[in-house]
Image 1 (spheres, rainbow, N blue to C red):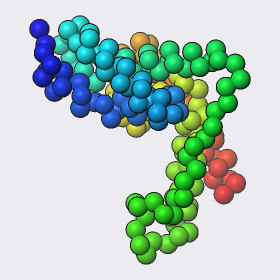
Image 2: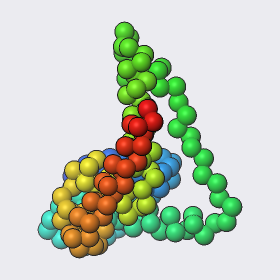
Image 3: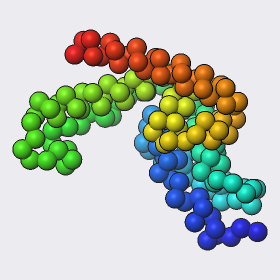
Image 4: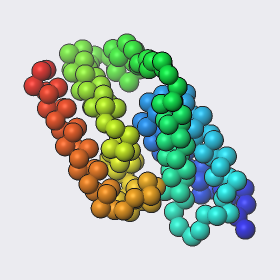
Amino acid sequence: MANERDFETLVLPHLHAAFNLARWLVRDDHVAEDIVQDACLKAYRYFGSLREGDPRPWLMGIVRNNCYTWLEEERLIPGRVELDDELIDTLSAPEHGQGMDPGAILDRERTRKAVDDAIRALTPPFREVVVLRELEGLSYAEIAQIASIPIGTVMSRLSRARAELKGTLALFWRNK
């Protein structure tokens, strides 16, 4: 039987990836934190059901299911308005060192925002495969396990998501 130390060793190192997936799916950092916390409680409660294998897809599957449950519940709330609270002053961010060209910083930030916006515009099934593959580096088999879909569906969704991203970003570059 697995114990608390096993849980800490096997599952907790994947919290960052779990939060990243939740943040991209629900598009709200605070909600994502709550979802990951709830997922960790579930994972701890059912840790004994984890068979031999990688705990990362197992945890990510729990997070994914929690995200979709939250998204479905939010869809049922009438009159909900989504606010974009990512209005920050990018030129004063600490990652931008002294002496950097402000034009280059602005171009980089505009590109980053365009990519973020393009990913956010994808439907959740497309967004999740892009995040899991491109940002988290999971294999098709791991994504299939997390999303409970065949590998062929993973590949199809990823192809369609990439095509949508390519089209959206082509418009960005054309209008730049």
